[in-house]
Amino acid sequence: MPGLRQSGLSTMTEARLRAGLWASAVVRHANQSGHPAMVLRRGDADAGGILAVLLGRDGRLSVLAQTRAPDGSPAWIRGTGPDPVDQAAADAYVARQVGRDPDLWVLEFDAPDLTPPFEATLL
Image (cartoon, rainbow, N blue to C red; front, top):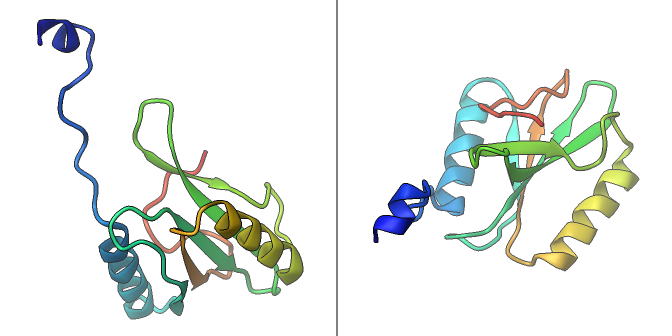
């Protein structure tokens, strides 16, 4: 369809890595790199979204949620806000998100400085 091509849209969707495969690979890589990680909740293996719970050295946490940047590229937002939160606040955020989307994966990473141990564009 010429109209789609001219407008910059494509008739094919962008290929995405399956959620289960990405989750497994990133947890394995983090563990091998000295950042203990685990799957707290399994979501839909093909198309589930992912929450990444980052556990800081002082016990405070930050929860990252998958999103898209304005240009359509994969990105992450700090779902619990810009400042670290306590365990109860992180758990409440995760529970709300899972309540809205039962296909979500929840991963936890030991991240002393609250920096994700995987490649991530933070918005």
